[in-house]
Image (cartoon, rainbow, N blue to C red):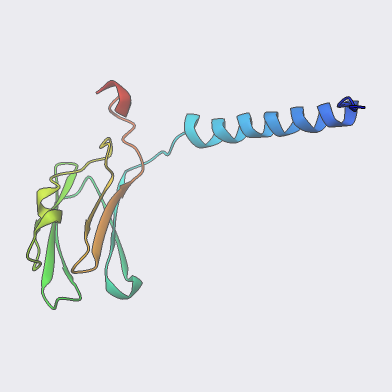
Length: 131
């Protein structure tokens, strides 16, 4: 004889509580967004980290594990790898990223250097999906 699945009131309350918590968490993460000036976070060998504002113009040289510098340029709200000592130059070929980029980080794996843009640009009025 088959037993019927009995859903009780406490079960419904728990399910609704978890559903409400999930919706609220999603709202807090995605709807409110980050505010302020987008930042460039650069990570180098030995977990060394540098943070620069994206709205500045700067040239940063990060000494990597290959012994030479990966040159990172921040200019006009964009950041890119200008040069790197590795053979394949993938990080240089990844191009420029900015606060609205669909790909928010660039990595030079052979030299153990990575940089990313954190935060959003509140001045655009357009989200990444509309571009």
